Image (cartoon, rainbow over all chains, first blue to last red; front, side, top):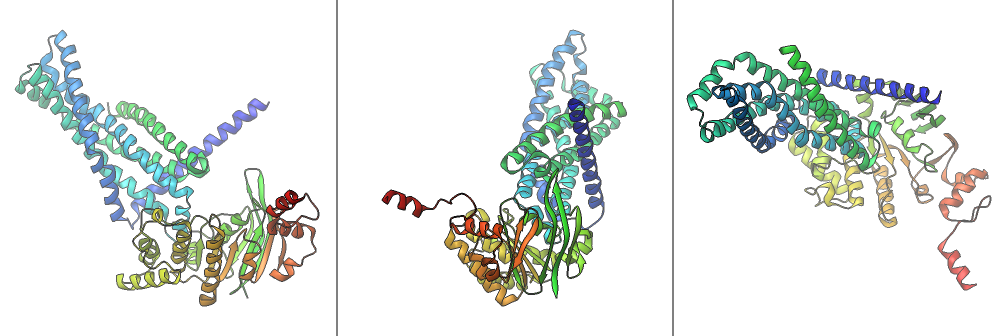
Length: 259
Length: 265
């Protein structure tokens, strides 16, 4: 009987949390649409989420493309299809790896910092102070991150794709001897606007997802994850893990939907 | 005339009932101390007065408006009359002291940059923080953080000031300075004030009345002299504990002088 009661309690708590999380997203969307928007804070967050992630994105993009160059050439040459290395790298990066790996990198670099920052503001009563001044914490803390994510993620993904294709070129063309015309010519024949748009839609949705989860975890630190430094630490870990898992799960559904 | 009126306030967290029917009236211009043991709900009551928490039952009237059931712009209009000094100061740690104090004026008023600067410098001077404008909260002491937070709360000329343990975490001398500062500013501005504190009996010098919370209710609500002379056993026990005197009804309270006496014996 006690076991059933515990299970029931766990289910109720989980449903409650999902509900609160859903309401958080609705409120954020509402305040994003309805002005005023804190432009200064949005630009600051674009600088933080977007610009400051550039080095990580350049490195991971380049090496992902280079690995794809090796692996792709190795697999395709077995079937005598190494001429299709360009389309293979292009499609893999633009449709799948670009958006997903960029989102995972941004989660690790910026998402965790967003949760920690908002979480510390929560436990040190800075969010209460904002409320008492008659200011809306969503407009100051959540909406700027949300908009910055929507702007930054597609741009970072595009940079990741370009650098990845260049990495594949270095390995495929310069090292393994695939013709430059073959590499880029076949790529332009097989990669279409539909594929680019698929990557764009994914990166936009990941931008929403990362900031939704990371801001939520920070905002509700003392309520759902406990008090003090330990609460912030737990919230940050949960934000990164949940965001990463949701990125992969959501990617599956998006791929199925846009297939 | 009552500035704040709390009526039959109840609040529970999970299954733990903290406030069990609090009723309290605070007159315009008076300052009261909210005292009681740890976990008695003093800060919870204070946060209800600021509309930061919603009660399970009861009302909190600020100027005859129920802040407990207010939302949105109406709640903000009520809060515009409130100042709140948080236990840890709650200064924005990414801003300098000047930016912290200027923040409410920048966001909520249409004052020019020059007007804001003059007002902020004047408030910082009144709390003894001239010269610390460009420092960040992490670069100043705990007492200075409290002073800066006080300046930020006062910069919008609140009619009501709520103080959540203003001296906690400070050494006794700085704590006394903060209490004196609150008293001096109250004399100058004449706000209605509520001070949640453990500084008993030092706080009695600057308040008009004392509300003693016990078991989720207001157990005693008197002037400091009457409260100190109370015959109620719970009040005597609390005062004995706070003053470090032997507790008549309970176990003996340890004091350093007791140790010296026992060594001499």
